[in-house]
Amino acid sequence: MNRSTRTVLWLAFYMLLVLAPLIIILIGPRPAGREFWREFAVAVGFVGLSLMGLQFVPTARLPFLCCVFPIDTMYFVHHATSVVSLGFVLAHPLVLILGNPNFLRLLNPATSPWRAMSGVLSALVAFVLVAASVLRKDLKFIYEPWRMTHGLLSVVALALALVHIFQVNHYTAMPAQRLLWIVLAILWTTMVLWARIVKPILMLKKPYMLKEVRQERCDSWTLVLQPDGHSGLTFKPGQFAWLAVERSPFDIRQHPFSFSSSAERQGVLEFTVKELGDFTSTVKDIAPSARLYVDGPYGTFGPDFEESPAYVLLAGGVGVTPIMSILRTLADRGDKRPLTLFYGNPSWEDIIFREEIEQLESKLNLQVVHVLENPPEGWDGESGFITAQILDRHLPADREAPAYFMCGPLPMIRAVEAALQKVGVPLSRVHSERYEMA
Image: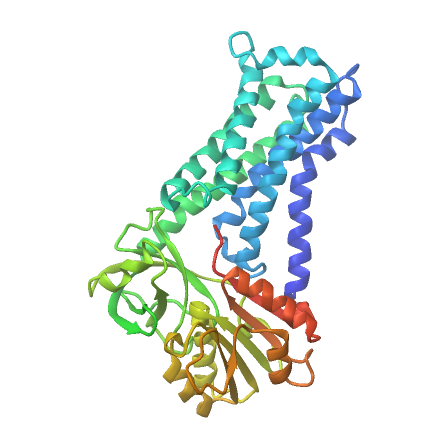
């Protein structure tokens, strides 16, 4: 079964789970004498709860799903559907109140029965959960405490919602509906247990030891890891993993980094990290022989996922990390397919792996196009940013033949995707790896 077929089947299954409560309402017997708006409110509430619960799936890092969907796409869908699910959840009480203002009395905690207050509390927790996530950067929430709070609030919101629907008991009295919500609750619980218990146990059995911290250009450092008591993992060029550095794999403080080493090297793993934040600024100080845990590999980014007669690679700054893994792997394989690398940086001295990229030009059928924002005096290469004009000058005549792999900051990716379209590259041929997934 090819990847496109699996994608369609998984999407169909996902939609079936979302809409299953509504389908059972439509085809099954319904309580007599209930007005339309009350029924409509129940329907949107059920869909909202189903959507909210299924948010545990994309964040569980299930290996069989991560081989079908790009994980940054899964996180984007997680963010978007969380907002949509909140809309459905909040629509449930609003529609009830608009249809019958007497429902306003259920908002009074002093007189409202628990079956109603559990629903109100669930909606409030869901609102705080989504609002805190959407505004996290604006409010400058520290990532680790936010992530822990995010997980706890998610469980609380779903538990209160399930208490609400089972105590109200209008539709859950139906065996099919009751069975469905029990199955969904088991599914959501399984996702939490996999992510928080099973996966850390598996990681604990396969620790890594830090062999070396190697300094690169532009405040970047390469961590060289070797397996400790096991054969290590295999990965494909362009993939990434989560690292737990000197912490238990049960700790929520894990960080995603792309592999920068060749996938053809057995055992040893390399990750190149640029000093950009609180954690990344400390990697140079990690002591030799420190213990690390690796959760991966993940991702569908790279030539092993897209067979093509030629490849165009586009990188900005430290976004070159997965690109270097691709170049090193293809060099080790003796691959002679045409490669074009567009690499944007602030200056000549900021080019990470500059000398090695020059060496790879002689080992590969590789054309390198450096684009510098602040070029040195006498620079005769491309300057500014990667634009449609620059792409047009260096891309092959057949723009549809190569597969395009791009990694860098979000503003760069958006701008370069538009530039690629402008010069006749179908976006279906463009694969992007984005820095941020949370």
